[in-house]
Length: 199
Image (cartoon, rainbow, N blue to C red; front, side, top):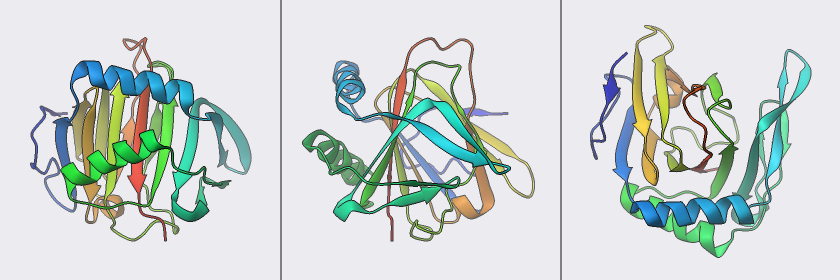
């Protein structure tokens, strides 16, 4: 498995999609301040998923923000939107300015340490605008993020830095799964914001 360095405007995928890693878009001290504010100010809740008909409550915490109270359904659960905060709108503005994309919602994830992660999946829920870009902004612990082609099983990975921005666009969700693997080496928290377009 190849690990790519930060390379703005470079497509990390060899085919069937577009993943652009912009690297850190904030200085370290600024990123740390954003992390502290997000942990303290966001109304975090444990996530719930339905697996084989059984409802599972995760250690990872989440929050959902969106224009006009838009709801978001995934993994058998429904998330009702909180109204945007000024802080989140400023982060959204930065993500949109750097990427050139626009979004109307944000799913936030709080991983307390490397013991928490996310398994292979695609963000292909019906409520998401088809092929619309998803902007992933990360604060806190640097974590590995991986992609796996659904047909060929080829994998690609990138290390997401504190204050970094990654964009998934085009047919990425159709042809690729992605995951945040667990890591025993990571002992500090990470907050991830995924700015999305909900229809």
